Each structure stands twice: as structure tokens, then as C-alpha cells.
Image (cartoon, rainbow over all chains, first blue to last red; front, top):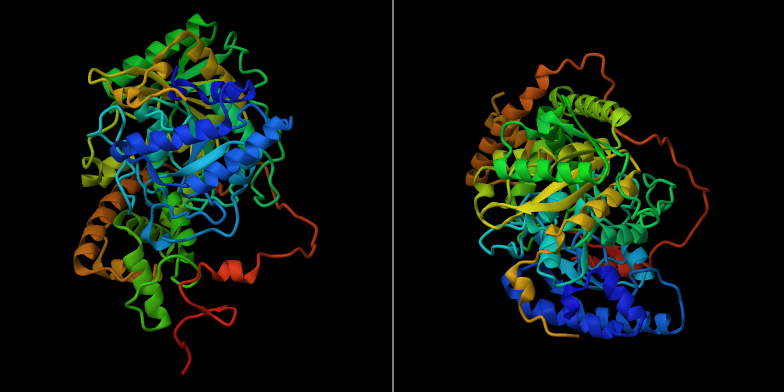
Length: 493
Length: 95
């Protein structure tokens, strides 16, 4: 059996049993990236020296009997907007080229403590702004299921790396669907945790009230293990919550007796027929496993995308004001005065999509328009949150699609940015309301592209979502399907 | 609403962006389209709705006011495009 067919938990189990060493799986992952990533483009760069050094450190700890948890020794990829001490972190932007953070993000630190081995940084839309990973300054990531299609975004590199079985799991971030949508497009499992479940310290900010770090892996069970490793209160992030959630403890608890609501509006106009059919078929699977399924009216769907883009852009315009060409990253060579440094560095350093969102956000926050746009969006956010509170008074979770279609062709989405924004319709509400969302593979369309479904839960019900995901994956096999490229060069470790 | 050149110039100056003619026209067109779409929010009556900035039931989080070491100056400056004598260096700003 090839090392690339092992899930993260299986890989760690084999390391624990000494069937394979940490160095062997780390070298295998690095070689695998070398073999297939020229085609996929999931990684911006690998960090071989760091990875092999960590592998030896972790092996020594395992040999010494240190209890590191159920993922010890597993290689993984980290999205390039999460800080790694001394290792380049660019957000896929020119403006952060060459930036080597002086500290680890809390998530990076916790993953190191869990004994997993970061082998490289994954590609993304510039500053996580985009739904296709095509706004990256550095490279285009392809969908491993069809190299002429996008992997989704903004965590497209992270999702593609898992789909192509380059690494057992990756870490992504989700501001408006950026973990769930690429996971769906690439046929892998992704969790956007509850806001506050995972520390954002060292996550380079896009929309601070929306951003969350989360796992992408082949299965919900693996996502649970990664969630356990990265979640928890952190005094460096005062929005993180002092809750200890063990998502593995009841992972086998099943869905018997759970009430799952199906919001009718999520299945209305605009949803592709094959996606609708696959998600409704998944509902039948949950019903067969003992869950109670009920349709209900969810009123706020049409308002989620505009409210989201106003809030996210407003926060971005403020967060990205720190890029001034003085403290780190790129500085324009053309600048002669301090004002010039700001203007030229930002104008040359940011890509088109980022500039547009900064402009949109600065507009929504500017005097004269603040009440009509930004404040209005915050009021609508309150209404969306209320609609979810009412739904979760009746249901344990909500089931719907992740995206209206499967992965589009490269180059298509950026032609019509408004249409691209609208494709976030099913995912942005979870960010506005701070809720957890789990994306699970649930079928394939006629062209063989993966279809994803989404489970939304109450705040801090992350474990319940993962448990439902594991129940689904126990009786289905969509998550075990891999693209042809995943078979390539798959020699044994 | 109509996004005028004046609005685009004002906002790009707020955002410290110096957009070229082509880029300005493109962004203007796209922002106008997006703002038009966002006007759907005006169909919702929100007169009695309190704007929500934070979704979780947390208020101010305090810590003890203790002095702890900050990051070493050299490490921070090592990322700067230009530095001198332990400080970030920029062109002269005051004559």
C-alpha cells in the first residue's frame, strides 16, 4: 500500500507502530510534491530543511515515549497567510514578498506541539480575496480532478494538495467559504470552525470578524483530530473562547435522533440540478442513519452576499492599511518621498482584486456612505444571526449545498466578478454569524467533478458536525475517491 | 447609485492607491455594479435593528498589566526594506 493512500490518522498510527519513520513519510511527501506539484501548483514553496529537522525532533520524542497525540509525525501543508517563524509567509501577494515572520502563529505553534510536520506553504488567492485561487501573485493552482478547472478559493492550494494526495492534510482559512468551497470543488473534507474556536494570532488578517483557521483532510475524522490540535483559548487572541472541545470523543456517536433542517431557499433558483440531487440524496443517507430531516423556510439568504462583501471589504481596507513599504515586505523602487512610498508601494504591491476590495471597503466606511452601507450591513448581519438562532432552536444542524455548481474552468470566474461573489451565497452566512460549517464530498457530476454538501451547526457545535460527517462517511465512499493524478508516482514508503 | 470619478479619486486617496487611467475605469465599473447589487439591502426594514459588530457573547477581555519582553529589535528590523541605527528608515519627511 502506498503512503499516499493513508489518511492522517492512519499515517500516525503506522508511525506509532514503527512500521514507518517520521523522516520516511516526510521525505515521501516532499518527493510527492516534487513529482506532481508542477502540474497541480498547490504549493508556493516547500521547506525541506525545516521539515526534515522537525521530523527528526518528533521521531526522537516519539521514541522517547512522549505522548504527542493522534497525529504525531504526519506531514502537512500550511496556507501561506499563517505565520511561520523565519519561513517566508506572503499571503500570495507581491507586497509581502520575502517576509519572514519573527514569530509562529498560535496555530503553527500548536501544530508543532502536536508533532505534525509542516513541509511547505500552500497557494491561495492574494490575501484570501477570491474564490478560485487565481488572484495569487505567484502561480495558478489547478483542480487535480481536471487540470483545466479551478480548485476553488481562497484555500485552493490547501484543498488541491489533499485531493492530489500530496500531503495527508492541510490547513486553510475561511472568511466567506474559503475552506468549504475549495474542499467541495476538490472532493475533500473541510471544516470552518466556530468563530473563536481557533486562535487567529499570527493569521494575517483579511476580515477579522469573519476569519477562521481550519483543517482540510480526506475525512471528517481526520478533520476532528486536526481541530483538536489547533483549537482552544489563546491569550494572544481576545476573541478566542475558553472552551475545550474534544471532537474525537464522540466522533462515532452517529446521527440517530438528530434533527437536520433543510432550508428551502438553499435549493432555489441558481443551484445546479446535479448539485441539488446529490445534496438531497445525502439527506436520505442521514435519514437512513436515524436522523430526522425536515424542510423549513430560511428567509435571509438573498441578503447574505451583499452584507458579507461590505463587511469583509470594510475590514480589509482597514487591515491592509498596514502595508506601507516601511516595516516589511516590498517597497517600490520608484518612491522618493514618504507619501510616495505609501502610494507607489501599495499601487505596485497589491493586485487588482485586492485594490478593488480596499476601495470598496474604504467607500463603505467613508463619511456620507457609512450609514447607508457599512452600518446597514451590520444591521443585516444581526438579522441573519437571528434567523439562524430561530432555525437552531428547532434543529441540531442545517444541511445544504456548499456552492451552486462544481468547479468552473480556469479564467472564467474573474471575467464576471459579481457572479463570482454570488457563488459564495451558501457559505458567507456562517462567517457573518460565527457558526461552524463542514464541507463533505457527496457525489460527482456528469463530467466527473466532485460535489460538496455543507452542514452548519450552532456556535461551538463543531464536534457534532464532525460526528455527523463521520457517520455519513461510514456508509458512503465519495470521500475515498481520488483523481487519476493521485495514483501517479505512488511508490511505497 | 452612480459612482463618479470624484468618488473614485476621493476613495483611492483615502486608500493610498494611485490608480492608472485603465485600472481606475475598470475598478469604477466593477464597484458601480457591486454597489448596485448591494442596494438590495435597502429593501429590508432595519429601522429597529441594532447593528451587530461581534457575534459571540464576549465583552471586554482584560489581562494583568504585566511587563513582558517584546520581540528583539533586530528580528523586527530584519524584515524592513530599509533600516538604520535600530530604526525603520524612510525618506526625509520634514524640511
